[in-house]
Length: 198
Ligand code: SF4
Ligand code: SF4
Picture (cartoon, rainbow, N blue to C red):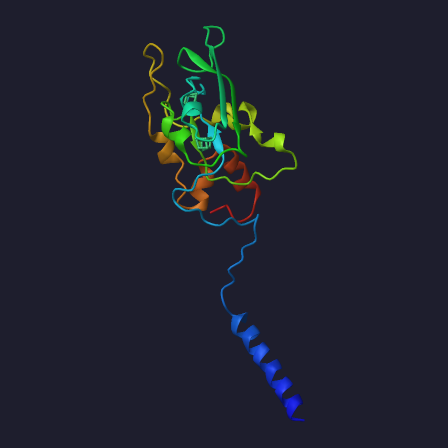
């Protein structure tokens, strides 16, 4: 009899713990419909930006590849021609690849870039089944032609850019809505997923 009373007491003790958490604010969120707020300086997946007039910011200088401590970036530059102009400078990146599995998201490529072309966005979803899928080439890094960020570059010889610093201002990651808004694919996610509408 005494043992049974002890078991009933243990049951109530368990229920008390359960019910004490019943009315707490739930720490879980409905990911992926709802995203957690990033830290202000969160470093996520990369994006190659354009100028406001649609030209690529990247001038194929390879400084980002040299700065990368993980050897994750491959850049092969090529000459612009009057008939085939990609960037305002003499050169552009004919090939630009980042191995996101090698990347340690340190942001040194962003720091090294003289034209604010490569930026780390607040996006972090990168799951896939094959290792090769994590090597992001220009088709996945370069934003759409109408997604330019910043003003058109100066028309001085070699197209010296005039709006350095605007990208970092635009890619604020202080809150989810703003951070996602500042990325090309983030805009798509924001429109298509609940919880990002702000
Ligand atoms: S964030 Fe760092 S590790 Fe990743 S590509 Fe840029 S420089 Fe390399
Ligand atoms: S992203 Fe920037 S640093 Fe890297 S090659 Fe292009 S212009 Fe140079």
